[in-house]
Length: 191
Image (cartoon, rainbow, N blue to C red; front, side, top):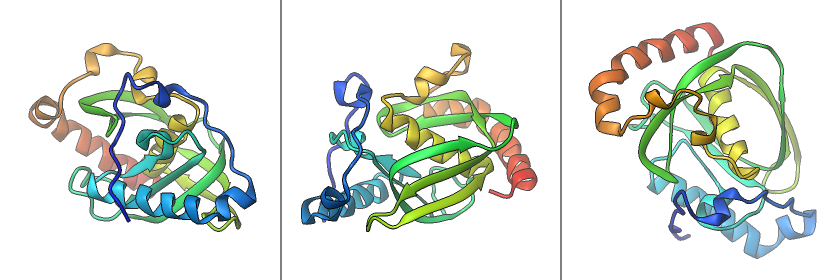
């Protein structure tokens, strides 16, 4: 496994609509090795998720894993989930404003409206169909990674530019309030 270089805002690969993978391409040694590298890169960067275009590969593969993440201690744990060719369906009209950041947009945070209850339909890394529902902060994480697969960054969804801040100022001025909001979301939605 290898840690791949993360691409940053301004790199055209981050704005591409990712192509779907065929079952044969997904099963290939090359793609399976890439998935291992994607997961290794996400863990090395302490991300909650990572999508293939973030490491320069415009294919519809992403991973989410939250295991006592020091960058996001308010996020509930969620097991490693690799999802390929996903479709997301919104299951309720409940939305919340979340502070988000992105490994491809270093040292910047901003508030984004996210749906609080979604269904993810995809195939796993071995091509088996998967369908599951996620709520709360975890739903926001999956939507963030899905956005990467359609060429969007969280900065495209920030509607109030006054919420942009770097990590130091987030910690200094906004973390305490947001952690209380995040804990409220976890209490209400469970994840």
